[in-house]
Length: 414
Image (cartoon, rainbow, N blue to C red; front, side, top):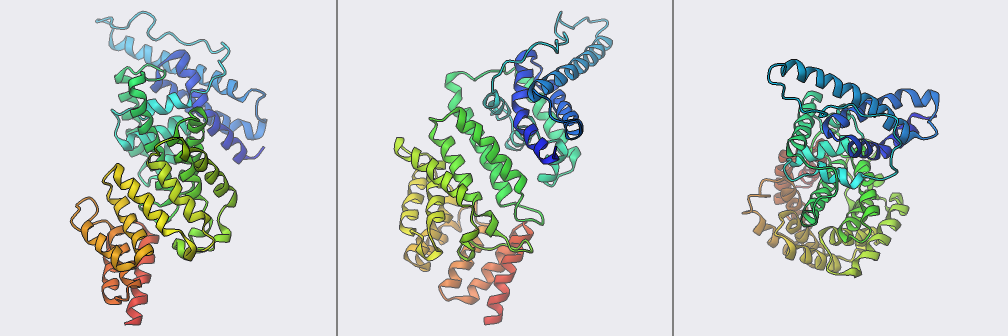
């Protein structure tokens, strides 16, 4: 039995196992630790001994037994501390019975809603989602975000304590809270995907494990909420964007812009699935931002060549996005689309308006786009300066490498 097959199965089962344990016994924070230990036990045993006939039941049983140990240890500690006050409530730390059959339910969405509770910071939501729902170890999450394991341990511990202190019951939130909580879930999944597809720091442009994890976690949300247009749009956006990944970097890991990519290397199956998803949902009513972004990605992916891209339609979609929110990144992308549809000078005029926006004025992306548009407008001197300014501001090694290469190319031509 291959380790990869076991790992894939465990990550698929992780949220269902945790959901079953928390639904039955409560104690989200302790149950999450118990499930992690059950996953580690399976990782050690299954490759050699084979996958059990009922792998989910095996994991639930092991996790429940470990939860018993953890709760008894906590009970003993509490009793030692509270001998005088006698503050332990009767039955509060009753150990669970590990032999009851598990209900065959999928609690992935409930777990996501808990992990993305608005009381948590975005970084805590991401960390807790990857551990509790994704089944990643703390060490794996720390490596993905380039922080020490101890730092990530503290972040996850604080998040679990916040969940515990909030007293959130295990179940779907009240009707009036669901839209906001689901929006937070989709946003967290979007952030995880973006960090995987366009790493903001470190030596690699891509962190495939994160983008793949985001897609994997978005699939059950779409499956459980098939009528929700934004969950469908987000899954389509991820698939359509990730489809370009094979052509996005060179053999040495260097960045290859979309216009220069070998489109025959794009993932045709992912494009077909993404186009089908977004096509099915766009006619159902007013589209949300993820649906519009997916529609833009579909136009890019379906263009046979960069020159045949329907930039006028992309401009129209970005203008719809701008009507929803004053997002500086959307305004930046809109400026690029305008430049490609009408000419670089039109795009540069829009960029000038962004220079006074503190949310993006110092962002490397603004300077990089300006450099590109000045380059195609025939102003190599100004373009050279913008590329250098962009390179100095990015924390991604491969993006910086690309920007310095563009600046060097222009310097040679001067």
